Image (cartoon, rainbow, N blue to C red):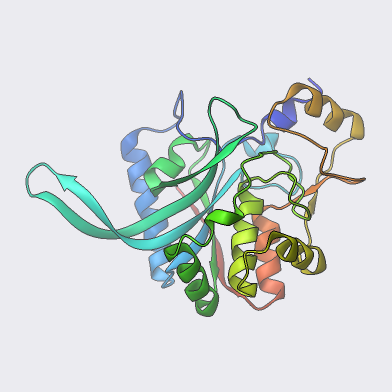
Amino acid sequence: SAFSSFNTIAGSRQGAVNPAFDQQQLFDFSKKVERAAAKQGARVFLLGRVGRSSADLPEGIKYTHTGIAVYSLITIDDKHTGSKQVPGYTIYNLYQNNENPAKSELVIDYPVNFFAVAHQLKAGIIIPTMALQKKLLALIATAGYKPLHNPNYSLLANPYNSQFQNCTEFTLDIINAAIYQTDNIKQLKANSQAHFSAQKVKASGFKLKMADWFMKDLSLDDHQGKVQTATFSTIAQYLQDNNLLKFQGVVSE
């Protein structure tokens, strides 16, 4: 159908009705991702997952969901030894609301939950410079990222204004809040307009309009002219252009 390819971008959901992988596969892959990040000394990194077949994704969009992973001590319950703390990564996400996909909420989970809805066991990793990681840690530790959340969700949110937000735009806003040390949304949007190059979404106007009519979680009201959105790749490019990128890579099964 005219709007099916847009439906397939959706990936900012929690939980899977029919998971593609069993718990052991998810656990093993999650550990592989954590080891890859830890090997690079990452305290904070951006993590991307593929929630749909790559063939279904529009050109230039490689990942369907982005979260921020933070190295933490995680409390786990062991039936033999009781609760204990183990090192690992906690992931800060903007997820769509399952009941109302046009709204989003902030959810903290772990890699094994994060990859539960993955279509393939492939993860994108973006590690900022240590200086930026420290600023991100301070922002996350004080919950300074929470005022940046806009619960009005759109799949192809325009990162240059604050009418709607998706997970990748939220990630970009957090990065800019850390860089510029402000949570003033107008200021952050002005900085994005000046320095960030969004991904132009290649699709005919008619196809996009059809998607807008039929999908609750897609609105084009925040776009004038070309439709453009923040993606995992454009954030990597933004960090690289500003000498804020330490490492970029892919982990696959």
